[in-house]
Image 1: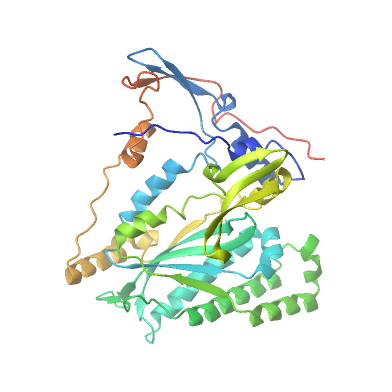
Image 2: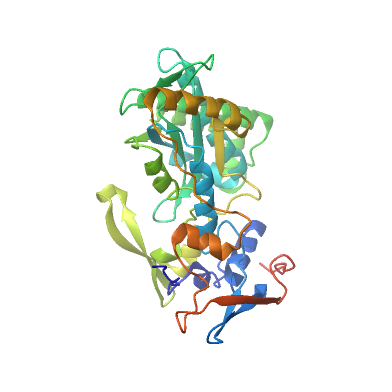
Length: 401
């Protein structure tokens, strides 16, 4: 039986009306979009029940990737498209994290540091996997950037989903990893640290880093050298989670990490007397569920830490999973695995991407958006659009002085 959609009592947009500091242009744009999402400002249309005549106003979405309300359908469709490419083999989940000492530099240089994080993690995995001492193969994986922890503080890290094996360098055989083991974590950590810091030093020498505010002292080469030496002495964290059993497990897991934003509306509990309370999972205390209360200004400050640079790509595919290899090397790997293990290919979900969005919601979530909420029998028929709509709407220029 199809479900009906329920809206949360409190949303991030309800909190963002409080302006507390001097946000950047990108942060202002995100704040404004989230505030007007699914409101009359963006226009919409009237849905009318063909049976009882009930009228429902449906407002347009802002479509911003930082919006908690606009990611569910896109995420589900992305997962279905990607799972069609998953190899019928066990998959691993790795997490690459940079030390907190780099947070001030990363906040000031998000695009540069995030690109280096992707590059260093990818080169680390590919270098070790190609080494005959380890796997001696070409691998395929997807890397997803997250910048937050449960408490909304800045915590840049990559989630990497990777098949347990690879194509031999001549492309003729599939090499599977040992059961429950991909690559030695300690070796991954040291190589990742070296590649990241080498690339960071190169960016510094090229003048690609903006050094202002709390990072201005790094213009002095002695201070910069001291930071790099300190980072080399630290143990960098590459965390390997237990392997998945197969593609279906990966499918369920992918959705947790792809199109998530810093906090979902479902985690918000209350906003009273200028303070926001939300649920967190305390990883330092056995993953116990707790609540955290912040002043609204601090909540907004933390939320805005995670606004990404314009047009920044936070989900990237490498090796066999890269776009140029999907129809060649990836398909070759799939056929080799299916030939040797007799594992059937996953049946594709019948998802027509040109169909109306409410039909795609029903296919993916079994939620009937167009079922009349009054009579529970009739169907809502979309009426003509009204209002300016998202494409014609532009956020005003605000005085942030």
